[in-house]
Length: 598
Image (cartoon, rainbow, N blue to C red; front, side, top):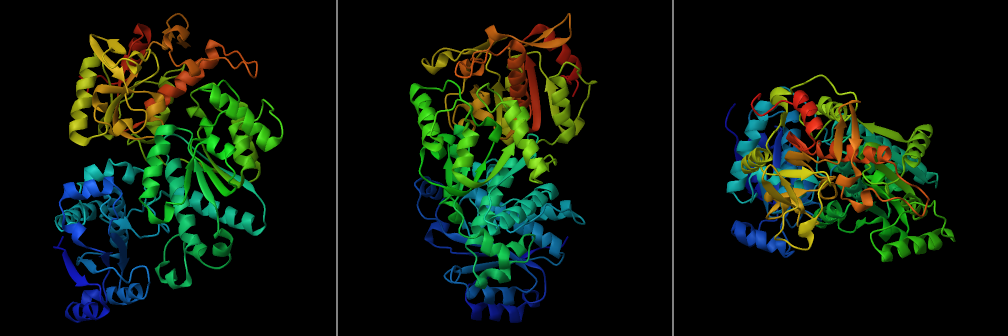
């Protein structure tokens, strides 16, 4: 491929016109450009910029675009009040560029800018699909060269691996969508538009396995709806992408002026999402809520999205007496009585006109989660109303859907035939916990975000005394996660073990999964068993006195299987497995490649 060039132009239309007379590719060639509000902060050291961002100091703004006529597009931008005060244009010119390559580079740069955090990204996310095109891998190598050139000029502070491991990137709304994600979002927009025009409520369900991008759909959709709501006729020249039709006419009228919130049951993910939303100008007003926030608050929403909706709670003994009283007070406030069968899903429905529920019923991990009959009823109702959307493309795990299915079979009473995923996915069995920990350390040094995780099969002794170990196996002493929020990025995480409540909803590059003695194998029957004595999540095995439910070992086994299914699908690049129960160890050892076999 030929060398690329980056033209630097002051964001003044006369200056752009002058450059265009010297380079005809500014008027008749596919290019990618960046317009930024560069100032003194841009030229400061990386350390100073990180400190400024940590303290919430205003960041300069940037817009990334692609066009076949840079001169005409700059004229349009110059007439836009939001961009008129930006100072500098960088135009990336490559003689091999075509429309597909430019769209891809535009998408990559927008995502990297958001994940890096140096600039506030002004772009909309009106619908880029992760489409293949001729020689894409060669172009993407060139994109990395372009990134490094821009990084040297101060556009980026971090490296690509650092950016792509950050929560700003992983929870960014600036994603290239898979085909089924784009179809789901288009159908959601059409349904919402029709329902709001008819002044009727609806419940839309998005169902998908781990790693199919349910959270991405939720975040992307929120940004898209906010963009639609804030678009004026002057902005429509930019609308030439997948969801352009929703930015005009009856669709825009129906989708404007929406009060939107997102409910996230897990504390850690909720905290991360709030931080990301604060970094995006058009999303700062969107509330990231607990179910209790929704029920006890006075706000009514046009739309509530619920991430991990299967983790909403039913009536059960809460974590504190205060929470128990809140459950009673909310039921009474919303429904006039404290009926024991009201769930947090009922609160969501009572406080919003429209709901979008993102569900994987196989990720329920506690008896207090929504019961299976309730989830089945929600799915059936959505199916009957043509409001059930399924995601199937595997985004997280490089082993793809085959790996997800294989994990399900590994944790069943009918194990699969032995299988290796070769170079596609690094699945390994370890006999020695110390060796697995060392390999996780190596992967973390190489690519970052590599952690040990485990089922709740050991007491949390270190919660009150940081000097004592929690997990002791093979002469290795480990502790549970110290941090309750953002543990994965915390300073000592590599030497700690994350629980299901810390990592559900997050991505790792490599996960070292410790399967404790809460999950065992009965050699005589060949069936998996739950060991109540080896399970230390009090809320995970607590009977439901309020509803008069006593949970059998077989019922609790379902939750423990789900826990290990979730843990074994966190790693994007690989999963390492260590098993404590001797009988189960022998079974999985015969089904999962060992370290020596790879």
